[in-house]
Length: 313
Image (cartoon, rainbow, N blue to C red; front, side, top):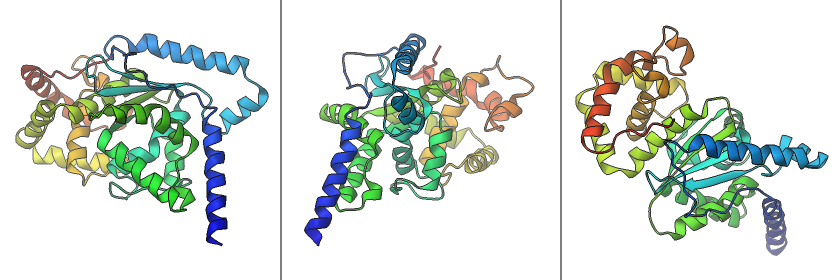
Protein backbone atom coordinates (compact mmCIF):
# COMPACT_ATOMS: atom_id res chain seq x y z
CA UNK A 1 0.00 0.00 0.00
CA UNK A 2 2.81 2.42 0.87
CA UNK A 3 4.57 1.71 -2.46
CA UNK A 4 1.33 2.33 -4.36
CA UNK A 5 0.79 5.65 -2.59
CA UNK A 6 4.38 6.69 -3.25
CA UNK A 7 3.95 5.87 -6.94
CA UNK A 8 0.82 7.99 -7.15
CA UNK A 9 2.61 10.87 -5.44
CA UNK A 10 5.47 10.65 -7.92
CA UNK A 11 3.08 10.63 -10.88
CA UNK A 12 1.31 13.70 -9.58
CA UNK A 13 4.55 15.58 -8.99
CA UNK A 14 5.72 14.71 -12.52
CA UNK A 15 2.43 16.03 -13.88
CA UNK A 16 2.86 19.29 -12.02
CA UNK A 17 6.40 19.71 -13.33
CA UNK A 18 5.24 19.01 -16.89
CA UNK A 19 2.97 22.05 -16.67
CA UNK A 20 5.87 24.15 -15.44
CA UNK A 21 7.93 23.10 -18.46
CA UNK A 22 5.59 25.16 -20.62
CA UNK A 23 5.95 28.25 -18.47
CA UNK A 24 7.38 31.62 -19.35
CA UNK A 25 9.60 32.46 -16.37
CA UNK A 26 12.91 33.36 -17.98
CA UNK A 27 16.12 31.74 -16.83
CA UNK A 28 18.10 34.15 -14.65
CA UNK A 29 21.04 35.74 -16.46
CA UNK A 30 23.45 37.55 -14.09
CA UNK A 31 24.85 39.61 -16.97
CA UNK A 32 21.44 41.05 -17.85
CA UNK A 33 21.07 43.84 -15.26
CA UNK A 34 18.59 46.68 -14.76
CA UNK A 35 19.14 50.23 -13.53
CA UNK A 36 16.30 50.51 -11.02
CA UNK A 37 16.51 54.31 -10.89
CA UNK A 38 16.18 55.04 -14.61
CA UNK A 39 15.70 51.79 -16.54
CA UNK A 40 12.47 50.29 -15.22
CA UNK A 41 10.08 52.16 -17.52
CA UNK A 42 11.79 50.77 -20.63
CA UNK A 43 12.01 47.25 -19.21
CA UNK A 44 8.37 47.36 -18.15
CA UNK A 45 7.55 48.21 -21.76
CA UNK A 46 9.47 45.15 -22.96
CA UNK A 47 7.59 42.84 -20.59
CA UNK A 48 4.28 44.41 -21.63
CA UNK A 49 5.01 43.95 -25.34
CA UNK A 50 6.02 40.33 -24.76
CA UNK A 51 2.80 39.68 -22.86
CA UNK A 52 0.62 41.31 -25.50
CA UNK A 53 2.43 39.46 -28.28
CA UNK A 54 1.70 36.15 -26.60
CA UNK A 55 -1.96 37.02 -26.16
CA UNK A 56 -2.24 38.16 -29.78
CA UNK A 57 -0.84 34.86 -31.04
CA UNK A 58 -2.22 32.46 -28.46
CA UNK A 59 -4.79 29.74 -28.97
CA UNK A 60 -8.21 29.82 -27.39
CA UNK A 61 -7.07 27.12 -24.95
CA UNK A 62 -4.02 29.21 -24.01
CA UNK A 63 -6.25 32.18 -23.22
CA UNK A 64 -8.51 29.98 -21.10
CA UNK A 65 -5.47 28.65 -19.22
CA UNK A 66 -4.18 32.20 -18.65
CA UNK A 67 -7.58 33.30 -17.32
CA UNK A 68 -7.74 30.33 -14.97
CA UNK A 69 -4.06 30.63 -13.91
CA UNK A 70 -3.52 26.98 -14.77
CA UNK A 71 0.21 27.50 -15.17
CA UNK A 72 2.40 30.49 -16.07
CA UNK A 73 2.22 31.29 -19.78
CA UNK A 74 2.82 35.04 -19.67
CA UNK A 75 6.31 36.46 -19.03
CA UNK A 76 8.15 36.89 -15.75
CA UNK A 77 11.78 38.00 -15.81
CA UNK A 78 14.24 38.71 -12.98
CA UNK A 79 17.30 40.93 -13.25
CA UNK A 80 20.03 42.02 -10.86
CA UNK A 81 19.92 45.75 -10.13
CA UNK A 82 22.91 47.87 -11.08
CA UNK A 83 22.66 49.90 -7.88
CA UNK A 84 22.58 46.84 -5.59
CA UNK A 85 23.92 43.77 -7.36
CA UNK A 86 22.59 41.38 -4.75
CA UNK A 87 19.06 42.80 -5.10
CA UNK A 88 17.06 41.02 -7.79
CA UNK A 89 14.08 42.80 -9.36
CA UNK A 90 11.41 40.59 -10.94
CA UNK A 91 8.82 41.84 -13.42
CA UNK A 92 5.69 39.85 -14.30
CA UNK A 93 3.16 40.74 -16.96
CA UNK A 94 0.21 39.68 -14.78
CA UNK A 95 -0.25 40.56 -11.13
CA UNK A 96 -1.87 37.16 -10.63
CA UNK A 97 1.19 35.38 -12.01
CA UNK A 98 3.52 37.33 -9.71
CA UNK A 99 1.33 36.55 -6.71
CA UNK A 100 1.28 32.83 -7.48
CA UNK A 101 5.07 32.86 -7.44
CA UNK A 102 5.60 34.90 -4.28
CA UNK A 103 2.50 35.03 -2.04
CA UNK A 104 3.22 31.85 -0.05
CA UNK A 105 6.93 32.71 0.23
CA UNK A 106 6.06 36.16 1.57
CA UNK A 107 3.60 34.81 4.15
CA UNK A 108 6.29 32.35 5.25
CA UNK A 109 8.92 35.10 5.43
CA UNK A 110 7.01 37.75 7.37
CA UNK A 111 4.13 35.97 9.01
CA UNK A 112 0.61 36.92 7.96
CA UNK A 113 -3.08 36.21 8.55
CA UNK A 114 -2.48 35.80 12.29
CA UNK A 115 0.21 33.21 11.62
CA UNK A 116 3.82 33.72 12.79
CA UNK A 117 6.77 33.86 10.43
CA UNK A 118 8.05 30.49 9.16
CA UNK A 119 4.52 29.10 8.99
CA UNK A 120 4.09 27.24 5.71
CA UNK A 121 0.60 27.73 4.28
CA UNK A 122 -0.87 25.05 2.00
CA UNK A 123 -1.99 25.47 -1.58
CA UNK A 124 -5.65 26.47 -1.48
CA UNK A 125 -5.42 28.37 1.81
CA UNK A 126 -8.21 30.96 1.66
CA UNK A 127 -5.94 33.83 2.69
CA UNK A 128 -3.42 32.95 0.01
CA UNK A 129 -6.24 32.78 -2.55
CA UNK A 130 -7.21 36.34 -1.56
CA UNK A 131 -3.57 37.42 -1.79
CA UNK A 132 -3.49 36.20 -5.39
CA UNK A 133 -6.02 38.94 -6.19
CA UNK A 134 -4.69 41.86 -4.17
CA UNK A 135 -0.94 41.98 -3.46
CA UNK A 136 1.08 44.29 -5.69
CA UNK A 137 4.74 43.71 -4.82
CA UNK A 138 7.15 41.67 -2.71
CA UNK A 139 10.42 41.94 -0.80
CA UNK A 140 12.03 38.66 0.18
CA UNK A 141 15.43 38.03 1.82
CA UNK A 142 17.30 35.00 0.52
CA UNK A 143 17.35 33.31 3.94
CA UNK A 144 13.54 33.18 4.00
CA UNK A 145 13.31 32.10 0.36
CA UNK A 146 15.74 29.25 0.93
CA UNK A 147 13.94 28.08 4.08
CA UNK A 148 10.59 28.17 2.26
CA UNK A 149 11.82 25.98 -0.58
CA UNK A 150 13.62 23.54 1.74
CA UNK A 151 10.56 23.04 3.95
CA UNK A 152 8.11 22.88 1.04
CA UNK A 153 10.12 20.29 -0.86
CA UNK A 154 10.56 18.22 2.30
CA UNK A 155 6.82 18.20 3.04
CA UNK A 156 6.01 17.35 -0.58
CA UNK A 157 8.51 14.49 -0.57
CA UNK A 158 6.87 13.21 2.61
CA UNK A 159 3.54 12.98 0.77
CA UNK A 160 1.86 16.19 1.98
CA UNK A 161 0.76 17.18 -1.50
CA UNK A 162 -1.10 20.35 -0.53
CA UNK A 163 2.28 21.75 0.54
CA UNK A 164 4.07 21.00 -2.74
CA UNK A 165 5.27 23.83 -4.96
CA UNK A 166 2.60 25.11 -7.32
CA UNK A 167 3.54 25.32 -11.00
CA UNK A 168 4.53 28.98 -10.70
CA UNK A 169 6.75 28.41 -7.66
CA UNK A 170 8.27 25.36 -9.37
CA UNK A 171 9.20 27.34 -12.45
CA UNK A 172 10.73 30.14 -10.38
CA UNK A 173 12.61 27.62 -8.27
CA UNK A 174 14.24 25.98 -11.27
CA UNK A 175 14.97 29.04 -13.42
CA UNK A 176 15.73 31.80 -10.93
CA UNK A 177 16.23 30.53 -7.39
CA UNK A 178 18.71 27.74 -8.22
CA UNK A 179 21.06 30.01 -10.24
CA UNK A 180 20.91 32.65 -7.50
CA UNK A 181 21.58 30.10 -4.78
CA UNK A 182 24.53 28.72 -6.75
CA UNK A 183 26.26 32.13 -6.55
CA UNK A 184 26.83 31.46 -2.84
CA UNK A 185 25.97 34.96 -1.59
CA UNK A 186 22.95 36.40 0.17
CA UNK A 187 20.43 38.26 -1.97
CA UNK A 188 17.02 39.89 -1.82
CA UNK A 189 14.17 39.54 -4.31
CA UNK A 190 11.72 42.34 -5.03
CA UNK A 191 8.93 42.35 -7.60
CA UNK A 192 6.26 44.26 -9.51
CA UNK A 193 3.82 43.53 -12.33
CA UNK A 194 2.80 45.36 -15.49
CA UNK A 195 -0.92 44.72 -14.98
CA UNK A 196 -1.40 45.96 -11.42
CA UNK A 197 -3.74 47.68 -8.99
CA UNK A 198 -0.90 50.11 -8.12
CA UNK A 199 1.51 52.34 -10.08
CA UNK A 200 4.75 50.49 -10.75
CA UNK A 201 6.87 53.40 -9.49
CA UNK A 202 5.02 53.28 -6.18
CA UNK A 203 5.50 49.52 -5.86
CA UNK A 204 9.19 49.43 -6.81
CA UNK A 205 10.10 52.43 -4.66
CA UNK A 206 8.56 50.67 -1.68
CA UNK A 207 10.14 47.29 -2.37
CA UNK A 208 13.62 48.58 -3.17
CA UNK A 209 13.73 50.44 0.16
CA UNK A 210 12.98 47.10 1.79
CA UNK A 211 15.84 45.56 -0.18
CA UNK A 212 18.23 48.26 0.99
CA UNK A 213 17.19 47.50 4.56
CA UNK A 214 17.84 43.78 3.98
CA UNK A 215 21.24 43.98 2.31
CA UNK A 216 22.91 47.12 3.71
CA UNK A 217 23.93 46.93 7.35
CA UNK A 218 24.62 50.68 7.56
CA UNK A 219 21.23 51.48 6.02
CA UNK A 220 19.50 49.14 8.46
CA UNK A 221 21.41 50.39 11.49
CA UNK A 222 20.67 54.02 10.61
CA UNK A 223 16.95 53.29 10.27
CA UNK A 224 16.87 51.28 13.51
CA UNK A 225 18.62 54.05 15.45
CA UNK A 226 16.27 56.66 14.02
CA UNK A 227 13.23 54.58 14.98
CA UNK A 228 14.57 54.06 18.48
CA UNK A 229 15.79 57.61 19.22
CA UNK A 230 13.69 59.97 17.10
CA UNK A 231 10.23 58.50 16.44
CA UNK A 232 7.95 59.13 19.41
CA UNK A 233 6.31 56.26 21.27
CA UNK A 234 2.92 57.64 20.29
CA UNK A 235 3.82 57.63 16.59
CA UNK A 236 5.28 54.13 16.86
CA UNK A 237 1.99 52.94 18.33
CA UNK A 238 -0.04 54.69 15.63
CA UNK A 239 2.04 53.09 12.90
CA UNK A 240 1.89 49.60 14.45
CA UNK A 241 -1.90 49.86 14.70
CA UNK A 242 -2.08 50.90 11.04
CA UNK A 243 0.03 47.91 10.00
CA UNK A 244 -2.19 45.58 11.99
CA UNK A 245 -5.26 46.87 10.16
CA UNK A 246 -3.52 46.11 6.85
CA UNK A 247 -2.86 42.51 7.85
CA UNK A 248 0.83 42.85 8.75
CA UNK A 249 2.38 41.02 11.68
CA UNK A 250 3.03 44.18 13.74
CA UNK A 251 4.47 42.17 16.61
CA UNK A 252 7.54 41.60 14.41
CA UNK A 253 9.70 44.62 15.27
CA UNK A 254 12.11 44.00 12.40
CA UNK A 255 9.19 44.11 9.97
CA UNK A 256 7.70 47.24 11.57
CA UNK A 257 10.94 49.23 11.24
CA UNK A 258 11.44 48.02 7.69
CA UNK A 259 7.88 48.95 6.69
CA UNK A 260 8.18 52.33 8.38
CA UNK A 261 11.13 53.45 6.29
CA UNK A 262 9.81 51.89 3.06
CA UNK A 263 6.41 53.56 3.36
CA UNK A 264 7.99 56.83 4.49
CA UNK A 265 9.92 57.14 1.22
CA UNK A 266 6.89 56.54 -0.99
CA UNK A 267 6.66 58.87 -4.03
CA UNK A 268 3.40 60.45 -2.82
CA UNK A 269 4.95 61.47 0.49
CA UNK A 270 7.67 63.79 -0.77
CA UNK A 271 7.28 67.24 0.77
CA UNK A 272 5.90 68.81 -2.42
CA UNK A 273 3.66 65.84 -3.28
CA UNK A 274 1.43 65.55 -0.21
CA UNK A 275 -2.06 66.68 -1.22
CA UNK A 276 -5.11 67.68 0.87
CA UNK A 277 -6.76 64.34 0.05
CA UNK A 278 -3.67 62.35 1.12
CA UNK A 279 -5.52 60.35 3.76
CA UNK A 280 -8.16 59.29 1.24
CA UNK A 281 -5.50 58.10 -1.24
CA UNK A 282 -3.04 56.15 0.90
CA UNK A 283 -3.73 52.67 2.27
CA UNK A 284 -2.03 53.77 5.52
CA UNK A 285 -3.44 57.27 6.14
CA UNK A 286 -1.31 58.04 9.21
CA UNK A 287 1.68 58.37 6.89
CA UNK A 288 0.29 61.72 5.76
CA UNK A 289 1.06 62.98 9.29
CA UNK A 290 4.25 60.98 9.87
CA UNK A 291 6.06 61.84 6.63
CA UNK A 292 6.32 65.62 7.24
CA UNK A 293 7.76 64.88 10.69
CA UNK A 294 10.31 62.20 9.79
CA UNK A 295 11.00 61.70 6.07
CA UNK A 296 13.48 64.51 5.42
CA UNK A 297 15.54 63.89 8.55
CA UNK A 298 15.82 60.14 7.94
CA UNK A 299 16.76 60.73 4.28
CA UNK A 300 19.45 63.19 5.37
CA UNK A 301 20.91 60.70 7.85
CA UNK A 302 21.01 57.93 5.25
CA UNK A 303 22.59 60.21 2.65
CA UNK A 304 25.20 61.36 5.17
CA UNK A 305 26.36 57.76 5.75
CA UNK A 306 26.49 57.05 2.00
CA UNK A 307 23.31 55.02 1.46
CA UNK A 308 20.58 57.40 0.26
CA UNK A 309 17.17 55.81 -0.36
CA UNK A 310 16.88 54.78 -4.02
CA UNK A 311 14.04 56.50 -5.86
CA UNK A 312 12.60 55.03 -9.08
CA UNK A 313 11.76 57.46 -11.89
